[in-house]
Each structure stands twice: as C-alpha cells, then as structure tokens.
Image (cartoon, rainbow, N blue to C red; front, side, top):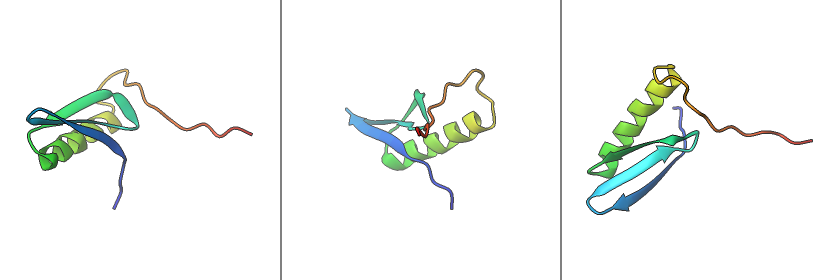
Length: 63
C-alpha cells in the first residue's frame, strides 16, 4: 500500500487539508473520510499531470 503525508485541520463544520508534497493545493470535506477521498482524487490528478504547472515540494540531500 502506498501512502503520502497530508496536513489537516477543522474550520467550523469543514475539514480542510493539503498534501505535504503539493502544499499549494487545498481541498475540503464535511468529514475526515470525505477529506481523505478528496485528497486521494487530488493526488491522482496532480500525479497524472492533469493540473498544469503544479508546484511541488521535494527534499534535497546536502553533502
């Protein structure tokens, strides 16, 4: 099973969140399960290149 990390918080009646790898792209859901579903869809779209010019974070090894 593949996993990815995400940041989430509750704002009023909604759950908001974004994928750590793509911090510019937020989504929301009425429940945590709905937020996770939205995040999966967002990840699939971003990974498939369906969102043009998507900025992405990465880790750089320093020597």
